[in-house]
Amino acid sequence: METLTNLRKRIETLQKEKVGLLVEIEGLKEKGEAKAGELENEVTILRREVKGLEKLLNVKDVS
Image (cartoon, rainbow, N blue to C red):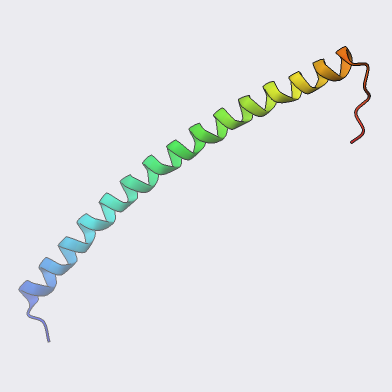
């Protein structure tokens, strides 16, 4: 059985680790959102390019 001092230290250590992990998760979520935004912009540009090329080549969208 752990002594109260050891148990208290263990709990404090785990609480600090939890806080650090939560901060890391938030940072990763923000990076993920930024990446998703960049990809959405790229997809929008590519769609415009496809439509422009279809119009230029007088090709209808078959999808």
